[in-house]
View 1 (tube, one colour):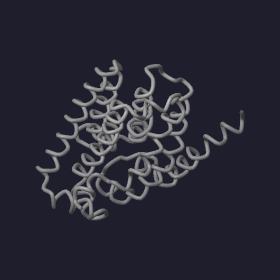
View 2 (cartoon, one colour; view 1 turned 45 degrees about the horizontal axis):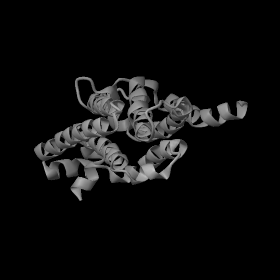
View 3 (tube, one colour; view 1 turned 30 degrees about the vertical axis):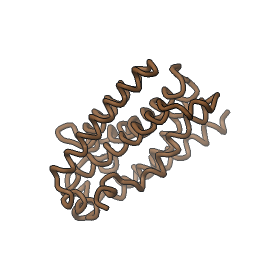
View 4 (spheres, helix red, strand yellow; view 1 turned 135 degrees about the vertical axis):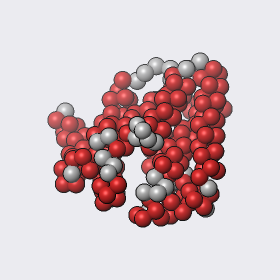
Length: 227
């Protein structure tokens, strides 16, 4: 149970569309869904998300003890050392598999995205960088590691070409979803403020952050209506 908590399995339902969107938009032949390489890529995709969730739980274990005790209890229940070992193992496995995948289908962008994703995941949660405490950079970092990077990663499982329409879609889809995530981040406002962590919400202030979230959510429909 503790292992499921630190992997934040409740987020998987939100990750499925991120995986499905580039597949549905780019696929021309369903035979690719029967290949080992495709499913190896899907496995790496979810490995990376689990890595990010675990390292965030580990880094925030003391902060979560008051407002999200179930996460803090999971980390300490498993043991900080054991959770750290799992995080390192997931990162190494993701890199190894991405190298094999890149080699087997000759698309090395997959390995590059994997490595960058791991570094951004570490930089987001872990001091001294801790991008989650760098104001608006928190929003930009999440936008990159949750939407732009993963969608580009999955697109490389389908084709080696960079689909400009897909990436434009990913940019705006990510912006709209970041509005929702900003509201979710606002739930942590009291503990982040008390702990001196300058998240986007703390930096902007609660009311301005929620206004930004609203604009991000309605931006895509507004742009679409203009065309």
